[in-house]
Amino acid sequence: MRPKIQRTKQDRRLPMLAVAMALLAAACNPVTTAVQKEGIGFRQARYAEISAMRSYRACRDDAVALDGQARAEGSSARYLAAARLLEKCEAEIGPEAASVGIDERMRAYALGIQDHFKGGDVARARTNLETFKKNFVGADLYFADGASFIESMEILLGHRDRGVVGEFSVANVSSQMKSELRRVRYWTRN
Image (cartoon, rainbow, N blue to C red; front, side):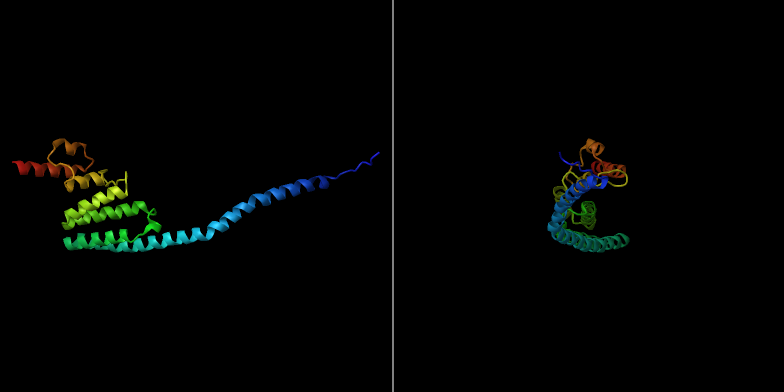
C-alpha cells in the first residue's frame, strides 16, 4: 500500500503560480522585443516628421504675416510674394512629413492660390488650383458661408463657363459672388 500524501493549500497553489508566471513572462517577451526592434527607427522617423512640420509652420507663419501686410496695404506685389513663399514652404516639406498636417497644408496652399489671384498672376493661380486638386484628391475647403473653395476658384479663374445662367445656381459659391458675376454678365451684354 502506498502511503497517502496530504497536500496543503500552499502546495496546490505553487504549480498554478508557476504556470501563471511562465505564461505571463512568455506573453510579455515578444512585445518588448518588437518595441526594441522598432523603437529607435520609429523615434527617428517621428523626430524627422516633427522637425519638418516645425520648419514648415515657421515658413507658413511668415507667409501668412506677409499676406496680412498685403491685405492691409492692398499691395499686389506683397500678395505675390506671400504666394511664392507659401509655394516654397510646401515644396520644402519633404517626404518625411508629406502625410502630416494635411488640413493646415491645404489651407495654406489655398491661401497661396488666392494670393496669386489677388496679385494678378491668374495663370499661376490656375496651375496651382490644378495642383491642389491633384495633391488633395477628393478634398475641398469651405468658406464660412458654406461655399466651396474649389468651385469658387474654378468660376473666378475661368475653369467654368461664366456665361451659362444655370452654372451659378448649381455651383457651391457664395451668394455675393453669384450676384456679382450676374451683375458683370448683365453689364457686359447691355
